[in-house]
Length: 414
Ligand code: FAD
Image (cartoon, helix red, strand yellow):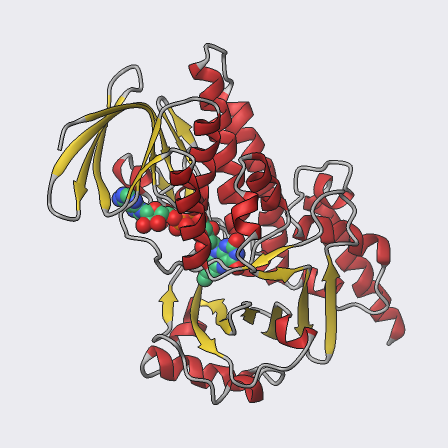
């Protein structure tokens, strides 16, 4: 195969890479996407947030998704003991999309990939990036190995590394750093539900909190398949014995709410386990490259922020690269790292405070405070850059303060 020269090389055709490629293509920038696997391929991350609809809309990828009939996600339900906390994206502080979808990612990602190809993006499957060398200007030469064993190189002015857990540049450039979050792990599979309840109950995405630090997700898809998975401290997941199927079957017993519905359902595949899933990097960009999506930072599945950050950072990096290629100056530290980390930091607080129990106190406190609920709902919808929302602007102290007030109220009641 001949060597290739492009302005921008994108590694990985997940949502982050596809959104970035669509933007560059719409703006006349030459780009190439190389994807290691062949789509459709399984990946976890099936509950989206309304904010990512903005990204698909802006890049012209929304219509193809709308046609797929994915299950509508209009909010999220959290259960703990007998208390139910329902968030409705129609009732949130920040204006914006009031729904999104629950998606089997193989189908979803394949739809995006086919659409960018239809729009003219050069996307090749079965092509694995094996090495990248940068010159002093930041221009790169990337080595690619295709499924049939052929090797070739791609020269590019910029690389967008959207390789997810492949983490191509973090590995090659030694950019990994330990996450500041606790070591948590997950075990998950899909079931074809034969006992799915009729009506809304059967379609609701639910997070069943079975212990302060352990929860079960139930994500029904419109094709009758439901995704189920447990998340908890790594030692909790490791404490179960047997095959992955045996472990997950046994764990289901601790969900009072879902056990009867799920106990006899066959798993469609032996459950996957991802241990210590939180990832972080020392820097989000360098001369000639930007890291996006999971290749950059992954926090925790509890608030379903992964795909939305993948599309937010994919789109932002593509915009900044376009600006720079058109001769404008870009302040990458502020315009990329500063911007992305402001959102990541809000979610990081929510994840941390979920596992300290403070956020759970607010979710499950009765009676609910409708104003606080709408403000938190906007965060859970992914609108984490809206500083008119006190639960965004003061995320660091507000969750703690409200939890403390609830503690005091509870003390007084005793
Ligand atoms: P991906 O979608 O992973 O795509 C990366 C692509 O790069 C892959 O197709 C891969 O084959 C390709 N690639 C890798 N290496 C190479 C290489 N060397 N050369 C070429 N191509 C390569 N997020 C949510 O939004 N909602 C959820 O409910 C949710 N649940 C989760 C549950 C768990 C247990 C975990 C661990 C994560 C969850 N996430 C969730 C996060 C979500 O999986 C990711 O944030 C999201 O998939 C990131 O998208 P991406 O485009 O960055 O990467």
